[in-house]
Each structure stands twice: as structure tokens, then as C-alpha cells.
Length: 301
Image (cartoon, rainbow, N blue to C red; front, side):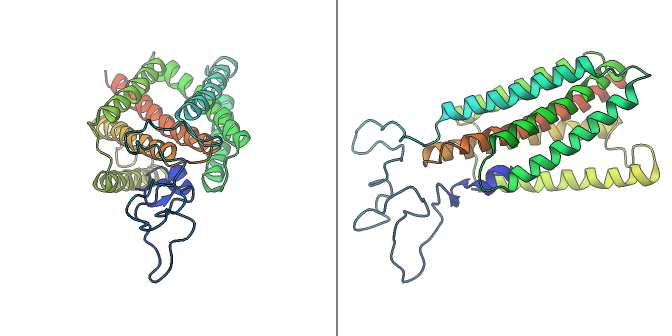
């Protein structure tokens, strides 16, 4: 299972790539050497390599013959690592967003300058995010720099919407994002959301269609003026805002699954930074969709 999040899909947090590898079949006629079913951290057991892929894997979180699960080996990612890295990344983003809100005024006289700075920081953050997504190793400095620059962009954008479009929209968007995160986490842990190939395929197809329509709308708005096809305002804008939030919730479920697999199958500890980065990207998506949706709803009052 590959994640919809490009960060996780390239890092191997999946059952068919990297640390889990249940679908990685051996070469025909070739011996099973060094790994078990595609898991580079599992030692191949003697005899039948398919009978018990956990038998000689010191990192597998598996209850064998009634014995209690063993503690994670040193150097392997744990859920605590993911939580701490994610809290650090989001903390940097929130601090820089608050500073940008306070130090970059968005009154009529200063709005063009502040908004221009925010757009510049947002573009650089996007480039850094793409660079980190395609790097083979996590770079904490790069991830934290991305979070800081993205925070400046979100701080100014939120201030603009809160001041000129919909009062209180930023706080409502924060509350909405937290509610979605907690709701999806509870549903995932309770087993109400089943992340499988069908779920993944549906989410990816919906996301591709959503992004394609947004791109077409942007082109029409650039060359035709106004709101293009109307996907960013009015009834259509509200509908697409709700779809965007729901897609973000689905991305969260996929991300939770990939993090869980990374912990279970012995991903290196530095991968916790990649998990934090991927979760941050998804939360930023949800927050921006909420911010836009609230602005449309209050603007129609």
C-alpha cells in the first residue's frame, strides 16, 4: 500500500515498498537471501521463508508463541519519535505564523508589501517541500525551514482573510483542522476506517480529479478574469471546499497507516522526520481548505 502523500510513497512506508514488502515476490529460481518478503530489516528464517516471516526478525512487533512483544530495537522509529518530530515541526510553523501575523500588517497601506512577502515565502516553502519529498534521507534542517517559511505564508494569509474577508476565520479553521485530525485518528484507531487498496485507489482518483479541476479553474481565472469556472466561490466553491476537507481527512487516514507500518516494520529513527513532514503537509492542506470554505460561507451572509 503506497500512500497518497508523495513523502510517504517515496520513503517506503508501505506494504509493497520498503519496510513492509508483503507483495515483494522473490525472483523466479533465485534463493531468498538477506531479506524476508522485501523487508530489508528482517533476517531470512531457515527453511520455509514464507511460513513465518517474523521468526528471525528482531524488529517485528509480533507476539510469537504467547511471548510479550519486544521493545523496539535501538535506532528504530517509534510512535513517540513521530509524535515529538511532528510537534516540533508544527510548533515552528505556528510560531512563525504568529510572528508574521503580528509583524506584517495587512491594512490597506501595507497589504501589497506584506502579501508579496507571504507569496514569496510560500513559493520558497513549496520548492523546499518538493526537494525534501524527493530526497532519499530526511533533513531536519530542511523540514524545519519549510515549516518556518510555510508558517509566514499562512500567518499573513490568515490575517488577510480574518481582517478583510471573514472575522474569526483563522481560529475557526484551526479548530476545524484539529477536529478533523482527532476525528480521523479516533476512527482509524477504532477500526472504523479500513485503509486498503480500494480506499487508496478511490482517494487517489478523487484527488487527481480535484486538483485537475482546480488547475483548470485557475487557468480560466487568469485568462478570463473573475473566479474562472466558479469553483472558488458561491455554491460550487462551498461544495469543493467540503470535498477538499474530506480529501484531507482521507489523506490523514493514509498517513496514519503508513506511519503505523513504518513503526511496525522497523523503519530507521530518522524516518520520523519524514513522517512529521508528511503529516504537516496534510494538515496545512486541511487548514487552507477550511480557511477558504469559511471565507466563502461568511462572505455569502
